[in-house]
Image 1: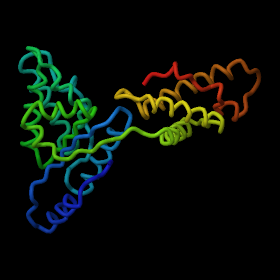
Image 2 (image 1 turned 90 degrees about the horizontal axis):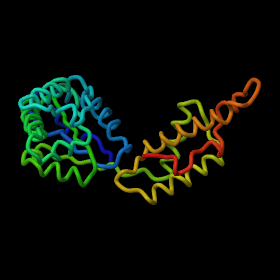
Image 3 (image 1 turned 90 degrees about the vertical axis):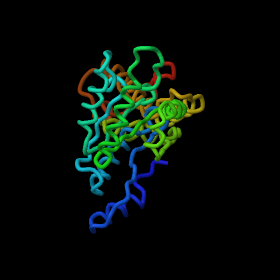
Length: 255
């Protein structure tokens, strides 16, 4: 379910334009799902939508993770987290693999300090900041349970399911077109069969669109190796058509 702003959010923004009081509404979101399912892209689109609705002043996206929020010395994590949040004011702060903030239980880990600082700034800037936390479904549940304030701040959840083999083929076709290449029907059929194999055996590390990107990059490299020895001027078809022999094997792919 990749849904956008609710009708209540839209109605609230219209009411504000008429001088009517607008009840406080949390726009913070939790995105769950495997890598390569479009979470960052959707976050960027939502930032623009919220700005168009007048819910955010700028509508930009600031993307970060644990390394961007947590420092290695006492007192530095709060400062580092505040700086990142300040950059995101007026837009969306997207925290990828947010569960890593709660992963450290040993002494000297400052992930909890980053969470506390983030929660305070979310409250202080609730009218001009949207925070989206993202990660694997099960790990995000543990993250939200790690601090009592997290569950109350994040009331909206969107799950990003894995793409089907057919959807992966559509992504491949678009990526290839953007790169100036085209697969033959036989190569397309072979690619779908390989995607189906990976899809059937997938686990939490299944790469989705990242798998497709890796697949295409390997195919382009193998295509270049194939046509390099050809003498004379190459035709457009020779330069742009990816054939079955150009495709990587399953053992060559990394999620």
